[in-house]
Length: 625
Image 1 (cartoon, rainbow, N blue to C red):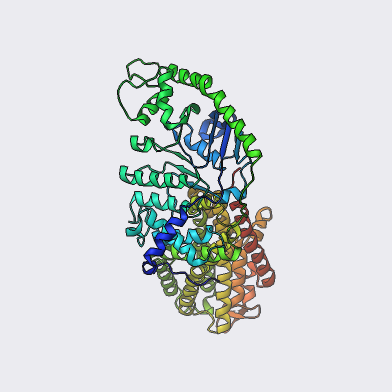
Image 2 (image 1 turned 90 degrees about the horizontal axis):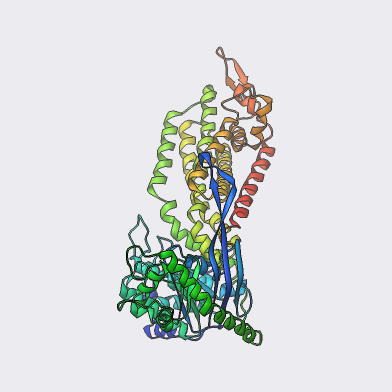
């Protein structure tokens, strides 16, 4: 495993080296990419709901994008404008290779379709900042650098890349502050956005997509971010962004502008020529105004802003003008570009993964432990287990075998509590990380297997420490067999069952990905397992008796009984000096003390099967359908 990297001592790095590193990041792109899209159409199905919100078989089809065409060359920055619902983000997602479904038309990168090597050379900044709240700005960028930058760079060089991006984006003052979240105070909204941009800038992308990068930022910060992007474009990169009402100063920094209205393109071309184009078709601004404000008014069907103005007619006229004046010209440019690209080389090729499996596992494990240690070792969770342990120890205080019913009840309580507790802890694992997993897998940052195993291993300490403490307290307080063999046998069975229960929670969470539905399903399943565990019902009808064979609680209870009792053990069962064999006790007789090995094997199958289901369910996250 890799040695710990210096995440907190970056202050001691030489400033001149950092400045040189900043300049190196903004040199020419590794590979110039020409983005071409022609007649892009995207449709979605809208299923109608009937009574009780049940989806009917009938569905309507809605067209989100209606034949969008354009070309963006290396060194150009394209801004996509339009009102909410116009299709800007949908088009950006399609161009970024992250949109599946009923997508038609042609989208190529240097004349070729989207591929895994291209994914590694592409940056995508989402509108929502998906970041870990407990990591600092430096830790966030360093971990990203370790995962996304290739092994041709040393660890120190990757860390310096992170420091260079921090300097370039003006994050030096908050570099050691945590990101924060809705319930945790951290950096400001503008700083969070710059961290998101910085994560993509780290890989020196040839193609960079940004969804509303200036949303929620003040004009100065927005200007700084767009200026940085403009500098990136100067290095031969292709940059595409959606943006909402940029200032005049920002607007004229864009090389090209695409205006959308209800999925229809109204203009595609140079930003400096957009006002002349609309003036030529009879839509000149009545007063001097910000070009972006004027364009958004037109996209909404507003021109003179008079009462009774026919907005639908204005939109229709603008769409017709585009098809008449611009559509054929754009298609001609796209076809000419195809001929040019066919004669050009592919340039530098990239492998699918930047780092090895073990490197990904190591970095993800360290990142996960840093992020989740605050939650895993929370005082509330520890206090909950300690209180329940002390309460159980007091209730079953020094319960001897003369009170066999009580001891059996304690063992079943073990089964119930340590069935539910790890189950519900694990259910929250993947739904809470869905957005992060989707973002990072979409960018080709790591293999799913390295992420999955890092989560499993990272959660083990807390999953095993708490039940160990619980058993240590309750076992001796309750007066169970005072021999090391019996104690460790009981502890092993409980830890084993905790891992199986955790696997069930991971599978449910990964399959459902909705916390409310997942917790409901998990509760129903575990209650079913408990009812079939052999404690509550001794005479189960044959038609439903099969449930015990899939019940985790049944096997767990059987193994716990086997950790304390043997078939020939006796207990007082009547008048003085009269003893009966433990195996004849009704509750134990129902479950049985035999079949210990088969129970271990059955739980082993569950342990592997549940995690396999969770892994297979996660394979659909972050993958374009």
